[in-house]
Image (cartoon, rainbow, N blue to C red; front, side, top):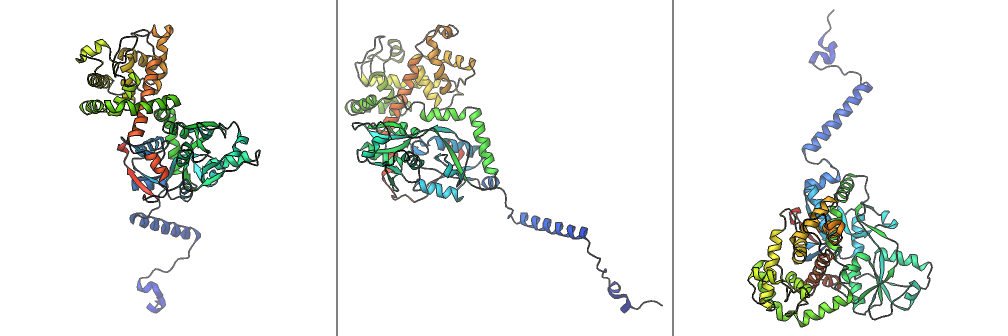
Length: 501
């Protein structure tokens, strides 16, 4: 007997009977569902990439920093600072644009990076145990100590106990507070005020003006600021050497951290980091307190009469007049009739042969001397090998102004023989003094030279130039230090593409 349609059930109307669900089939169904959901998410652009990929896709590296000569500031040539240079190199490695934000306080930088409100905090941060609980530190890039700063003309404190009779102020949330707390264990009477409005630069200004007795600053900060505030003095270190590093937020996502690791490993290995530290700190200890004060006095008494000649030469030869003035001060202290035992004369101390080549009739005439010196320096720059970039190109040109291109080239050859980089001033300035030793100058084409002199010459000019910039431009550091919570937005951002470097 054949079954009727009613008896056939679902099979009669074309519906396959439901098969029993096995474990294997269940797993396949789950995997299929996950893959379908994932593909749908990808197609709609909602796939959650790791931190590094998110930065690359957005094309922006969000950086917290602070306005400070050790980190990030605007110079006449544009933004600069050690942290700025490092960030720009890292942004170039990623192929993205760097967006810098300068929160209103140091404390705000720490809070924001610990909460993941930015990708990196590059702000001269000291690595401490307490901070390591709140944020993740990248490889260290510089070593400093914390130093007690006092004003010249007051009694120098010799130890921690002698600080109990003065006022110490430190900036809020800095590692300086931790150091003072540590010192207080052995000196219970030690006290200090925490200033939650001014940063360390502002407090250094107050010490320089005699408004407070002491403050604490990192050694790299102290050495830079003392050139501009010559009344500041270092009493003693209050800490053991400490390390500086970038900070990232704590996260299980290691992608950005690993890329930062690769970056610092690379720039340490190829000496890029050493070169940047030399760029920002290599010349900072060349100027003494007396030399600083003397320069300031003669800027007021001698420079005004020569200003128009430096301006004319700067315009004609496309050289910053302050660099020309710095050369002139190093050569003659801006004296028209200056003459050396070797017969060089005038503001720019031209030799007789050089003056003749340049068509200078009277080396003691200020206008002719400055014009001749500027033209001669421009020639030096043009003769430096093309592969040498700025600012090293300028430092090499200055060295050749003093010692000659031949001896400079000898030092570059020695540098290469000894495994250094002949295109970097940091390496060549270590070999120039070797030209005074027969063991080395006998191996060179041009022989003996007073190789220490061009090194001092270049480093002094760099210091004089920095001072002239400070004294003739609006003092951005002082402005930022003293205009607490001014008209600037709390988190002012500046976006800079890698090409800006």
